[in-house]
Length: 289
Image 1 (cartoon, helix red, strand yellow):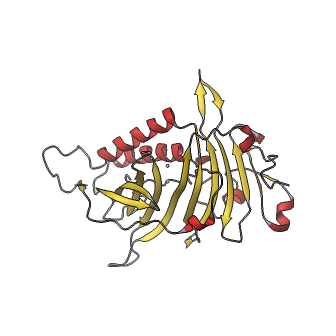
Image 2 (tube, rainbow, N blue to C red):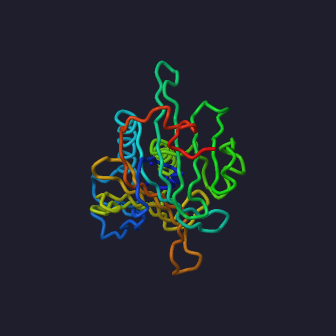
Image 3 (spheres, rainbow, N blue to C red):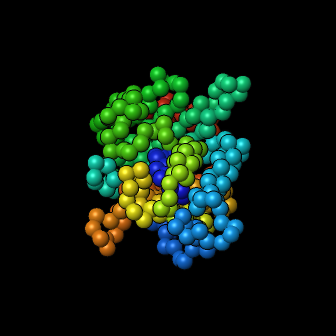
């Protein structure tokens, strides 16, 4: 949770985590070799080729969603986030996080979607904490800043200008499940379009995690395409996305694609047994005033 045509995984797809070391901030290996599998709408390929290049990627996405909903109740980790906001590419932000997935029984929410974030870097935001629990606190997030600003708790509308300042997506879009749902929605939409090439790369790595990469390319800029190139790194062991990056078209002919957003998840731990206390600002382990 942001490789199919048009996936902005927000994340804003954020995941979560317990204790971490900032030493894990080394950049992931994202160099890719010649793909082991390539599909293109403009190249019909073999007789057994799928109806659309996105079909194999969509199948992986549906399988990933099934995995999340059936096998993952909660998870923790560290996320590295970088976004272009109002035309400016921000510096990387490092966040530890915890997430508990929504669970529904007989049409009623038995476990609300819940997320806790603690910012680690850069220094300007280090120490900021954010908590959001679906259906609680009037559906507002509760946060505190660092320094003297940290003396006050702030209850903010997740979609309000203050909470959205410096962000492309609200915290309510966070998490692997939300990310995969958006991926599927956009993939199904783009399946109605041509000019799409999908490549699969084996043995890519995010730190020490071995991944298969789905890369989608729209060669020609069109108003209905969200990106020029998108890459989704699927963890070979967990079968869920642990990195998403998208790039816009070059500003000039022969130029390089421009990074728009990237989200990388490290140190993931699944089904760690998170409780309501993990999403309570009065938790003594947290620094809320």
